[in-house]
Length: 362
Image (cartoon, rainbow, N blue to C red):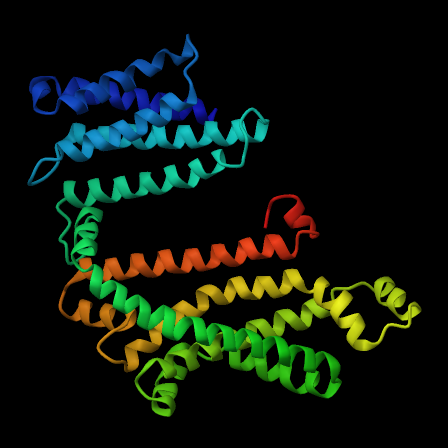
């Protein structure tokens, strides 16, 4: 029913747009061709239409609409083209998901088409709405302006990436996660530490970044060391709490079996309890991969050399260079997503025995 509704919306919006654009048909020939092709898909109720046709129509409609965008406002039939293209994008994703669930298409490889199409559709809507509705660039610049600024400021963006991600995030992430893991093992070994440290850990994890960052800047200076210290503080306690919970994941029967074999504490820890805690540890690593980047960027708001993502975002907003701010946000998003993806891939290789990995859901 949803697929039929989306097919009707896309086709009827295209026919309505074609009717409204007839007086100026030659002004945007690609858009008129999209209207005609999209309207013809209403014949799907009599003849089968491949899902790849819907995907191709989505891309063609978005490209034709962006190329034909006029200056100074967008006529009504352009909005109909946007509605039609969005409906076909939604329909394509729905049909592709159904085909993957039914087993007619493989999930590996083909499954990546769904997030890619969704992301392209969002970028197209962003471009069309900001340019077509004359949204002021200081409020929200179009993706094309952000991409142009990205290409023009590649050197600055790279220097900011090195300062924030390479110098602050990676060292702080490694130190915080390793310290949390080692303290979790000590806490598991000592009931006294477990009773004393875990409540403090829960309390410290609730402290806001804006309260920690100025203190770290006063303690460690304005360079990357203070940002790495903020990252350590943010990543330590998620790793501690998750590891302590993971060390208790092994069942009593498994622990009794190790005792039957006269295994020592450290043998049980290395061969049973730490492997069983692997999903919990990697869950903390994935959570910390995003927390670390957020913490380093926010910490740079409170004092940094004249380089860094947080510094550039703060000064860019003050100078109304919003396209540069969005370029920095794009770099941070790509870096954080790639960091998370690398950890997820490592998790698949290390915890291959876990049911979530065997089922392909890690």
